[in-house]
Amino acid sequence: ADPRTACFYARRALELAVAWAYKHDAALKLPYQDNLSALIHESSFKITAGEAVFNKAKVITTLGNRAVHS
Image 1 (cartoon, rainbow, N blue to C red):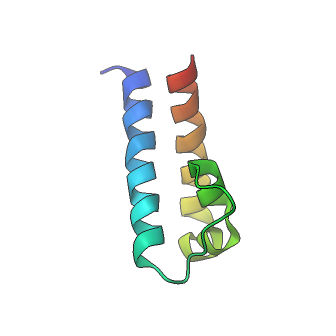
Image 2: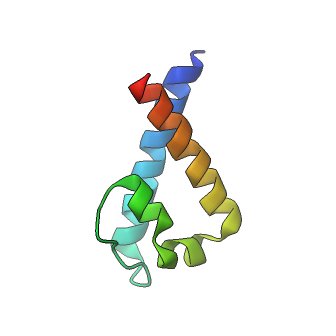
């Protein structure tokens, strides 16, 4: 298995999951930008998702970005 590809697909899965959450949870408020980083750092997402999920989402976002851009 290729770690770079795994990171890319993990980030894509996170994007889809976060988009689904924003579409189906009225408690989530869309941030000023609609990129993944802005979506996961929005305070309503951080509160709703919880610290553990938020921290994992940050790691996946960072590793996915590195995989795509390096």
